[in-house]
Structure formats: structure tokens, C-alpha cells
Image (cartoon, rainbow, N blue to C red):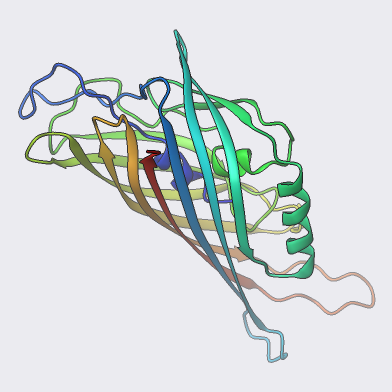
Length: 280
């Protein structure tokens, strides 16, 4: 799901370190407390609208909305030189499917879910070590994510940029390239809470499987979002993001006996909200 650009932001975490709050800045780094159990709730909505330009057919414009909620836990097990090993457990998944097939696929995946294992490095990169099943919700929520955090100390108002490749939600097989700029907007009075904003652009680098490779295809998009991090907890507690993508599929030469397809414009909007808290 797209969301992996917004999903990657959700794993950014912060650790309290001995840098004074203020002009000297803070180091953004993942280092959750060993033994802590973090409960996470992902809410995501994907809205897609496709319009065939110049067509008067009844199906010239189509729309589809899919929502999904995932409740999961991540337990910090061990610190290593390359990151923190965390056990993940999916408690439940709720979905408003676009079709009976989607619902059947969801049931099939959740029925096979087992506890998984991920490694979260200090700069925010996530590697799935063991997901129990290649189609589990662990990859849906975490996936293989690149580094997101600055490796240098940053002060309030400073920015850093990251580039990554992500699969695009709602379009199986499609990949996008995201260039995102992060800014440390502010810290709470005590310095325990960090507020970060995100602005970015997206372009497609590969086609969805449903689109013929011969088709002329163009797509551009934007990413906006905010994250709120509890530095004492060492984990993100609130992440909100929106990705908007406009795709244009040029007319494809028709086969004998088929009507020529017109230019199609597909607009996709993905909104995601992830909340996390330490289990009591």
C-alpha cells in the first residue's frame, strides 16, 4: 500500500540524549527501550478516481474508496550494532473492501499471521527479518524502508532531505520515487516532544501490472505530513500524512475488433494516521 512513504515516517523515533535543548539541537535517532511494548494503530484511506477523457460511455468515470485499520504491537527485544531487534504482533485488521475478492484476500492473509521480527537502525531504516508469511500484515505496515532521519544533530528550524523508492498503494506492481524534505519545527517546553513536518514530491518509476508496458504513462504527486515524537518513549506517537498522485495513461492502439481506448486520468489520494503508545 502507499503508503509506505507515510508508513516509513511512522517508524521514525527519537531518543533522549545529553544535548541541551535549543540552539545546539538534538540528534534524531531510533533507540527504543528494551522490554517496552508499543501499541500501534494504523488508519488508512485510499480514494481513486479514473476518468476517460472525451468518453461519453456510462463507465467513463469510476471511483473507489478503500479503508483499512491495523492494530499491532512492537516489542523491543535487543540492541545490536546495526539496530534494535523488535518482535511484531498483528492483533487485528479491519477493512472496507473494494470487492469480495479483496475481503477474501484479507481474511487469507490475517489467518496466516504469526509474530514477526524487524530490525530498526539508528537512522530509521527498517528491515524485515522474519515475517512468518510473505503476505503477512507485517510487510503491509512496515515493509523494507530506507533511512529517514538526519545522521547529524539538528536544531529547531533545520531541514534534511531523503530520497526513497516505495510501492504505490492501490496499484500492484507500481513503484514510485519520493524526494521528501523534513523539518524540525519545534520542541515542547521540556524538550520531550518533537514536532516535525514533511513536504515532498513523487514520480513513478515503474508501471502497475494492469497497465500494458507499451502504454505512455506519466504520474506526479505530492507528499505532506506531520509527526509528533515522544523523546522519552523513544518512539513516534502521532503521524499524519497525505499523498496525492495524478496519473495519465495515453491511448493504446486497439486490437482488431476492439474499440480504441482514450486517455485516462487517475487521481489517487491516500491519507494515513498512525498512533502509538506504550502498553501499560
